[in-house]
Image 1: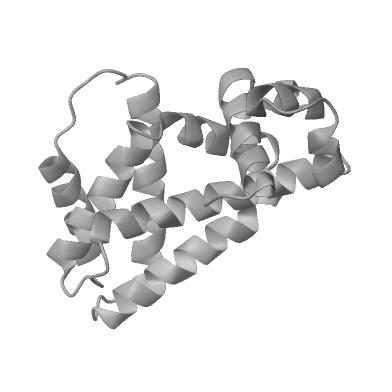
Image 2 (image 1 turned 30 degrees about the horizontal axis):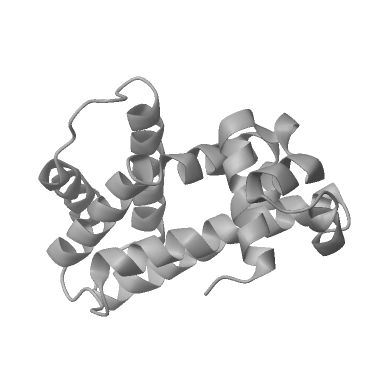
Length: 179
């Protein structure tokens, strides 16, 4: 069960998704979370602390989504990993579009804040690719990350509402992984 800090970080993400970073204030988070005015500032004393908590929450939620796609199974093949990643990518652009909009807002406005989380995600993917025996795992992890970000951006903007087949996305990820 989420605690108050987690609930407030989720509310901060909702504010950023709806209003952008300029709309992120302690009062806006209080209103989004349905708590008394001043509650957010009691937990996050300044805007930097609030932004850091929201960015950390993006990373946590991304990780949870990827785990949900793969279940408790560690992918044992490129095909299984590609399916898991494709499901997560489409989930981020569809069911979790607000989370993805918030991530992009942070990344565009404060890239230094999201850089560490991005590096952790790349390292985890690199490790997974290495365990599957994929050559040049760092470069392949970066290619998949770049593809995923681009796909998510297009599905939220230029291709919004278009049906995108998970099998097609998985095939694209496989091509990136297999060279």
